[in-house]
Length: 606
Image (cartoon, rainbow, N blue to C red; front, side, top):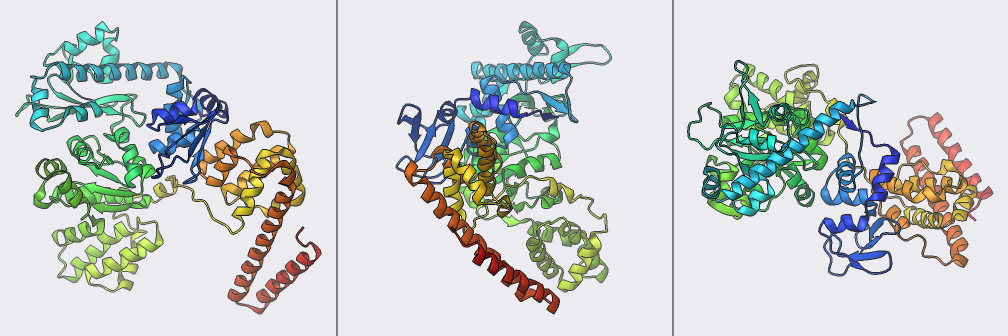
C-alpha cells in the first residue's frame, strides 16, 4: 500500500500548513521580526544568537548559521527525522488534507479505506481507555507492577502504557457505548470470538497494555503483558493479531518516540522487548526501538536503515542472543549498516542494567560495544572443530556466507582480512572461499535489498559553486537574468550532478517559459529530495545586488564559472593522458586538448 502523493496534493498540503505554526509546534520559539517574518534559535545546530529565519510570505525557512533551509516538508523531515511520504502524511492529517492510497498503481477500494479508518478509531479510543483506566486505578495490579519497576508517570504517558480491566466484557461494553461494532472490535483484535460457541470476550483481560503506534504515531494495536505468575493460557505477552492496520513484521515499538533521538544521536538501538527500549529512553538514549515479540524482519531493517546506518544490537548475552545477532546481521549487512553489538556484564538485559546501575551504567555499556564480527568469532568454536582442516573449511564457508552480503568493497576487504586471521588461513584462501559463497546458498540473502534502500543524497562541492550560487540567486530574483543566462550558458555546460546545477537549469527554463510564478515551489520540491544550503538561501533571500549592479554581478559570475569549467575540463584531459595506455589513445587526448585551447582562444571569457 502506498500514498498517491500527486503534485496537486503536495501543493495543497504546503499551502494549508502555515510553516511558522508547524515550526513552533516542534518546539522552536519564534519571535516576530517583521510583518511576515520570524526568527529564533536554530534547532539544527547549537547557537546563542538567533540565525534561524522563517518567512511566512514565501512559506520557507533558512538558517544563516548552518545553511539548512527549505519549505515545511523539508523542515519536518529534518526535525522529526522522517522521510517525505511520512512527513506528508503527518502534515496532511494536521491540516485536514486527505491523501488517497493506491495499490499496484491503482487507487484503492474506498470500502477498504473506510475499514482502516474505523480500525484507527477503535485502536485510538482503546489506547485512551487503557491509559485512563491505569491512571484512575492506582491500586490495580498494573499500577503496582509499574511502581515495582520504578517506571514514572511521565514515561507511562510518553509511551501510552495502560491497563486492561480484569473483566471478560469491559472492553466490549465500552466499545459498544461508543458505537463500535463487535465486528470492527474483533478485526482490531480488541475482542475475540470462540469458534465453537460464538461467545465474544475481551482479548487482553487483566493485562498491562503497551500501545503500538505506526510511523505516523497512530495507535494500531497493543502488546499486552500478563501480570500473573502463571497465566491460564501460558502466554506472557498477547499481541494484536494481523489486521489491515497492524502488520507485526512492519512495525517497531517506540519508533515515533525514537525518531528525533536517532537523528540527534546519529544511531539507533535495537532491543528485544518493550521494557528494554523504555529503559534506554529513560537513561537518556532515546534512540531505542524493539520488534514485537517476533524475529527481526527485513521490513523492520529497512525502516531502521532509513533513519540511520549506525545500529547497535542490544540482545541477551546468551547463546540465543548470539544467534539472534547473527540472524539480524544476515538481514542488515546488505543494507550497508555499521553494525555494533552491546555486551552487558553479568548477562543482564538493558532493563536490568538500568535498574541496577542507572544512566551511567547504560552509557558505559554503549561506549564498549563490539563489532558483529566479534560475535561471529565467539560462535565458531561452538559450531565447528577448528583444530581439523575439515572443520576450519566449514567455518570458512560459514563466515563467507556473511561476508558475501557486505556491499561496501572497503568494508568487505577489511572484514575478509579479519576473517582470515580468525581462522588462521591465508587471505587468498579466504577470498577464494568468498568467491565460492556467491554461488552458494549457505545463507540465502538477496543483495538487491541494499540496492533498493534509499540513501541520503550528498551535495557534491565543486570549484565553481560560488559562481553558480550567485547566478542562481540572480535568476530567482529576476526572470531577465534567466533569459540572459540561456544565451550565455549552453545547457550542455551543466551535467545536473548537483542540486545547485539542477536549480539553475530550473530557473533558466522558468524564465524562458514565463513560469517564474511557480519557480519557488519547484525549487522547494527539489529541496525535499536534495537538501542544499545554496538553493535554500536563493529561495529565502534572493540576490542581495541592487538592480543597477545585477548585470555586472551576472557577467563576473559567468566568467568565473566558464574559467572554472575550462580548467576542470583541461585537468580531466591531462589526467586521462597520464593514464593512457596506447599511442593512439594519447594522440586522441592531445587533439582534444588542442581543440580545447583553440576554443578558449576563439571564445575568450566575456
